[in-house]
Image 1 (tube, helix red, strand yellow):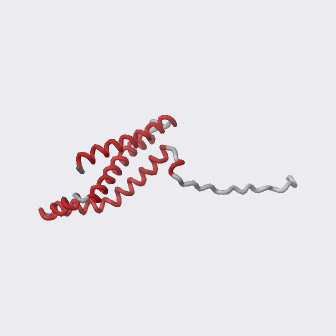
Image 2 (tube, helix red, strand yellow):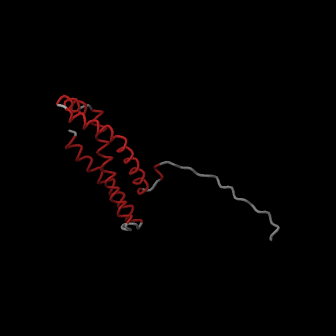
Image 3 (cartoon, one colour):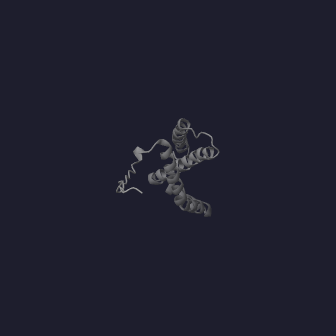
Length: 131
């Protein structure tokens, strides 16, 4: 055994949770989780809207009036984006699970496609459904 003193290295933890430092596949993963949580939380509101609109003609008019408000349209736009992003990212993750597209350039490209396709589809659906 050596008689030299053991020097312990003291590492300072570095917690940088700034999203701007994440690569694009990491952002897709985080937004996939956020969109899933948003969809789950808003599911109760959507079920209430459906139940109220199907209960009576007065309930349908109430829901129609509620969804005509600008804030409700903004929430619906968020729901449309959350659903489409969650769907597109889910397909990407399923392909990654079967080892398709796991090379770094392809993984970065598919994460960019997820953002692009979900935003374009959101714009199309929002234009058609909300306005």
